[in-house]
Amino acid sequence: MSEETLFTKIINGDIPAEIVYEDEHCFAIRDIAPKAPTHLLVIPRKPIPRLVDASSEDKALLGHLMLAVGDIAKQAGVDEAFRVVINNGAGVGQTVFHLHLHILGNKAFSEDSLGF
Image 1 (cartoon, one colour):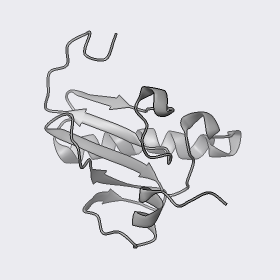
Image 2 (cartoon, helix red, strand yellow):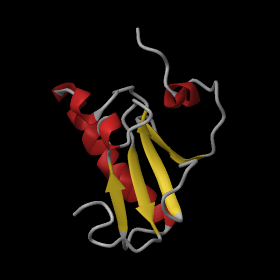
Image 3 (spheres, helix red, strand yellow):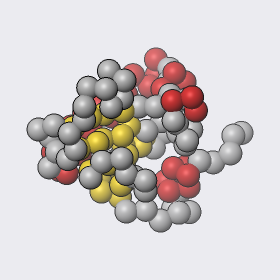
């Protein structure tokens, strides 16, 4: 079995975290190294290392995460303009290998800030 990630330790209650949203499938916390004034992480309770490791049985969970992003963005007051980022692999900046979605808001992003 693989080593527990930081997020699994939060889920298990081994590490405290300020949870700003939660339901039976996922929860959201503030990023400890924010890249925008609003930077939240949406984390599924099921440990999936990377997006490419999700299977067809995760289809409903992946859809749920996207709907949760919308609810969390509304709750955070950034629903008019925000960016969602999923890093897949160390080569693009993934540091915790437990799937998570970044919600970035209250910042103007230029077209080239992420290469597109």
